[in-house]
Length: 308
Image (cartoon, rainbow, N blue to C red; front, side, top):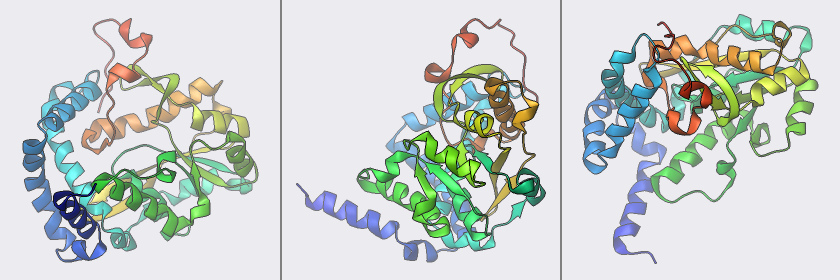
């Protein structure tokens, strides 16, 4: 049953989610205002959000050289989330995006090879398909299957829809692959010379060294690369003011690793210094409780720290 209150709320959400609403105030004005105003407003509505951010940063940095910075990192992460949430509604800003490290793309695709492009939920990962497509990179992207389900109501559903728009408009709907698709489809694409993007930081069952502890992650990217002998090309988004850019990193060759586990650890290790330097870019909760394996519980009290 739709009540007058819920009907008005839905109307306001649809109005907010329209491009016109975000063209009224320039992004250069909106972002600093939201970074200052939104976190305390959200805290008033849901005090648990601050506690979750603090727990996230405490857990994330626990075995690094920045373990004492978790409170400040939590405040920065909440402000950065506000900025990125606002940029999500401004896809036209990707017209100004840049791609750095193109030489790594060329190296990973030498000889017409397929490639496993890996990304993390870091610093506005929703922009990656849009940037790649806008700059003419021919890629497929593995996306969460919840984008193909009935979307949840309210602003959360509108945000899911907007995230999918980034991929569909830039790459085409046929280039988005639900993550519950048969793996053979992805293998065939890579073996045919295609590039397939997939996240490395999805919870799974594969014990992976990460930031001084062992977490249980998916083995998908490393397994795909090992099976197809395709290079792994890590990428990450970087926000510079109101602009979202993409940086391509040094590719990894499966032939340099003895097994899938070694390659999986190398992928995670690529992102460690980036996260330690700017922990506020982490979009998902790296809470050890569901992710940590027995390797952490048996670790000595003074674990080796990961330096910045």
